[in-house]
Length: 188
Ligand code: GAR
Image (cartoon, rainbow, N blue to C red):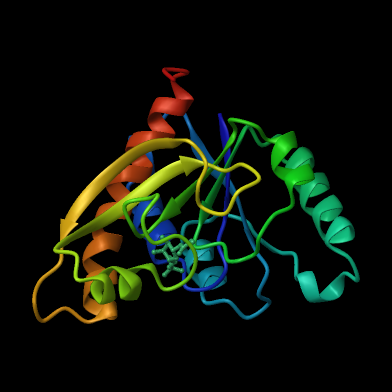
């Protein structure tokens, strides 16, 4: 089962996933796509002998053109499952409907709480004592598609958004491994 990971910039979670890629067998990451030509993720991926392709949305005048290129690239690499791991471009309903139940996203909160940007900051500001991460199917909504799995993480009284995010990201890798493996085994 061929996995493509779409990630915008640092690729912290993807990097951690690639370190333990054997755990997602029979799936494997065959392709990484980023929208940023200078994303630090590109070097990280090369370290694992994986291919990273830049599809910069600024090179396309419409979302349709950008997504046509994305779709073509995924088809050329015979991708079965698309994983969004820190992919900050919103995909259109048309695009995600072509990948129904075959595109998942990892988000740093216990959805449906705190969707969108700066989820760890939103959690701290809300006064919550627990947050976490969620893997969900991507649909036409933003971060509100059907949930596959969640992991909770405590919020400490002295947490900053960065310290909470770091603790959450530690769990993101494990949750993604579990969800990709489940999908790969057709167990959903
Ligand atoms: C990850 O924590 C991911 O959950 C989050 O962006 C981070 C990417 O970090 N995604 C979202 O917030 C999606 N709404 P990274 O580039 O260091 O892996």
